[in-house]
Image 1: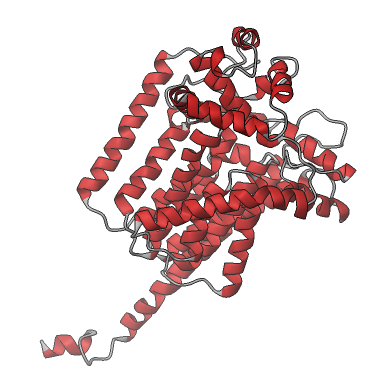
Image 2 (image 1 turned 90 degrees about the vertical axis):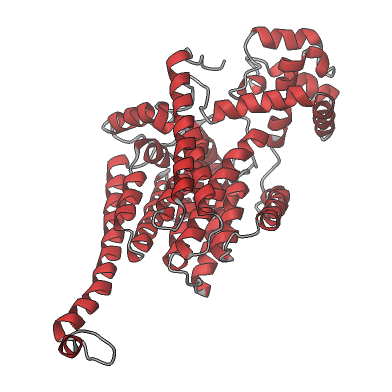
Length: 495
């Protein structure tokens, strides 16, 4: 026995030369794998830029670029994004390309750092799947479109990847890294009015390093912070960023009033004559899918015109609140129907606004389209997005499963998993209250955050019965989505 100990690493014994080298090689190997993950992500980023160059300019992109050229900004589209775009334009980098490059670099940079952090913690397979999730066509297909959604996703995933480099190992962020994370989260919050539902939970988990052990207290703080951030967005956009008011805040009240009139009858909103409501109903303008037909002058714009005369200015908010209070059941039915549409839950496979764009909006501003070779990839993205695997409700269920299994989070990776799951859950639930359209691109962050949460949760300690119950819940949701796809006819596009 004594001879055995003298040749081993027993107490008080010197390790053999070969053993010492083996012990030294292990951390080096982990470091190399982390570097390899970053290099693969960089390669995928380069391929993305080359294949989809110069990015897709959507209708919103064209409108924003017109503001960049004119120097006149409004708050319908995020002025923070337009101001940054104008900065690139002033440096001589014209077109949609600089914003396309920015969101792709942020996207793959964040995913590469996240994969590297998982690799350093011994989760090499999970790190590989992170990169595979990054090239999943429904996500990547929308990320190449120069939109506020792509800017938000890029900034959020970059913040998560950077913070995870330290947080997965249970270490605090250096001051410079924390400052960069704040900058990324701040930009993400400014480019979408509802981004606070995603960014604030991330800020609490990534910057504060919360262990998420006091749900009521921490949940209350998160909701209060979200409300505070949303309250200051309009002053920031209109005063600090000098964007003219566009009336974008009227879309939610108008959509809700139309939904209440649809479910409770025209008399529920007496500010608009019943004949006009019936006319809008007959034309199919009162749809839970999106609010656009009500705001379209050629479709049902007369609803807006009538409300502007009978409820001008801020009084529309009073009409909205009073109508909700008077008809809470109709309001709840309307909001549930819209959330169901957004999440593609009990909905047909064919939905408008699902497939990623294969070309730029026709324009005279010099915003070109990528080569025709991307059409096949974008078609695949549409097919997968319309499938059961692409339903946002399934990814939402996965985020709930992570929260069920990993709460309370007591380690670095577990805390990251819970933080991402909360960001996805709060983001998707918020659409049930503030959503006005069912475009698939709105859910790219929620789906990506849910996927990253699942991968961060691998290897964390949890009981097998919890894992089984969570998997069963996700499976039930998948079966419901499959049943809907088989039984429901295709959804008609809105007017």
